[in-house]
Image (cartoon, rainbow, N blue to C red; front, side, top):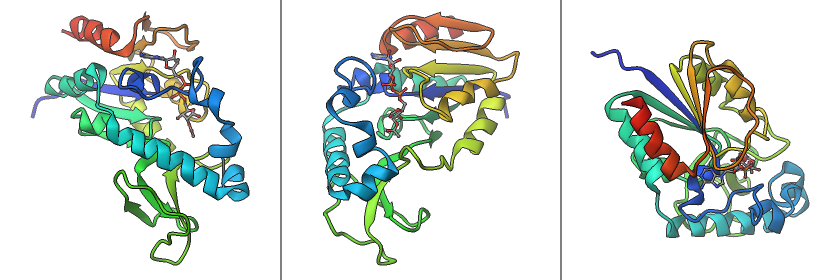
Length: 228
Ligand code: OAD
């Protein structure tokens, strides 16, 4: 077996922007239209679960209508020459549809639902809406399989272990504003090479960082050339 170099890609909403999914914090982003605490927090769910359900039903419907873009596809193509793991904050499935085979979702997945009381009781819902009042097999309300503000991030330790092993860490399309995900960069080995792809200025502490200030598709093309 060849000993391929390990690439870990830490991705955020920006990698899916060119597919037509709005980011959160950019101008025109989702958190300009919606109050984040109303639709994406555990308090919001307790206060108005129907609103939250509707918000994620809309996101799920939109996901069915969009396609992975060149950035998702180039990242998947890197699997020919590298051992690539994607650690994403995104709840869309565009990495998988773009061909990536190892994807860790830190903040959950839109195409899944779970019991409101048992986080391990998870079902696939595809792109269909979760109807109001729909129950999981344990009799609890079915809720989106999303990690909301105010909730623990169950995959964070797994993700930290993965980042520790990276020879090359890619940071693509994330403002690094949300913890604990943003803190993962700090787990990179001191010898790891870090490439940050974002069209805007993102503050990221660390050494060995090469900034490619481009949209994800162009940035990934450039990265592909650099890595060759
Ligand atoms: P943000 O909206 O905070 O940041 C998006 C980043 O993408 C910014 O740095 C933009 O500059 C960049 N960007 C915009 N267009 C781009 C493009 N075409 N190519 C590359 N980058 C582009 O999104 P996240 O960092 O993903 O959590 O946000 C993290 C978490 O906050 C999300 O997972 C979500 C949100 O609230 C929950 O809802 C729980």
